[in-house]
Image (cartoon, rainbow, N blue to C red):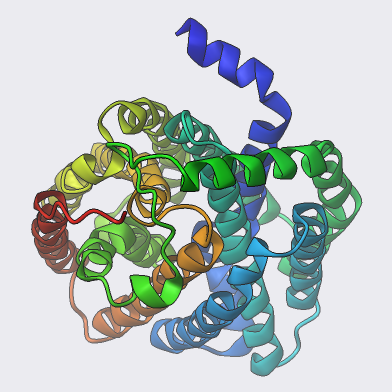
Length: 411
């Protein structure tokens, strides 16, 4: 514990940067946008399926853009990169507040998904994995804790903002990000030039060193990665939690109605989701540094599977608490994927590689609201959808097992 605390103290500003990125990505996350779903459907005359299709198109477009833009983090100064993303996210919130047509609504959703869910999380995880080697797992888990804090804080914030007109609420959000969040990021990145210089020196030294147990000396390019079977075997497990949870959270109001739960109780259960995500991310961060991300890959979805089984079988309000608590464990454990690509493929082109994996994740989160919306329009029960999701979890975990057994060395 003492080395852990010493590491945090010595790197508190940059670790705080990682936490802040994931925390403030919340306004581009599905759980926050979905809290305004009823108002947006009513304002623009959209059905569940129609809103799901629009959300899918906006998210797919953001994923395609992320694949192209995300690799720029390998060559653009991190300070300028982050300031632009945060400012663009504020602009996206303002665009939503003033949207008057479905086209403008789609543009706003695209920008929120690209800058919030996509680029902010991508920047946080790429930065932690790139600038930390020995303590990569811990750094990723600390940065990932911002997602958990975001769930807990912004879910409650969204609930409170429902007391004011939705356009006014999003105007408040835009102003707060422009005035507070952008300068805060710039302040947190003081000393970045020296940090990057040391990173380049370590990278040069690593090229002359032998491969380690949990890392490869070879620095893979993105073109090489897409031809490696391990990437595609690991990908279904890597995107499983965001894919499935995005769908269930996006249609959370329908879930609450079908189960007979109270919306405020359901929202409060996200505190448990946030706590379990945070604790899980810290535990798995230590485990990554001890045993490696690849060995943990087939196991981290087990709690999500348990939570889906609860969702499929329990109608009592306690089911919401159990489901979100178990899902939060797997959500926190997704820090594994942040370390996995660095272990398998090195860090020289990590931004480009993570942009590809992040884009695939974004694509998956585009599909799930639409797929579930179509199923709901076809009157398929949430319990049946939960059983389908459990089947996906089992299959993706089996595929991930082949990544563990494959001992291909990247050197």
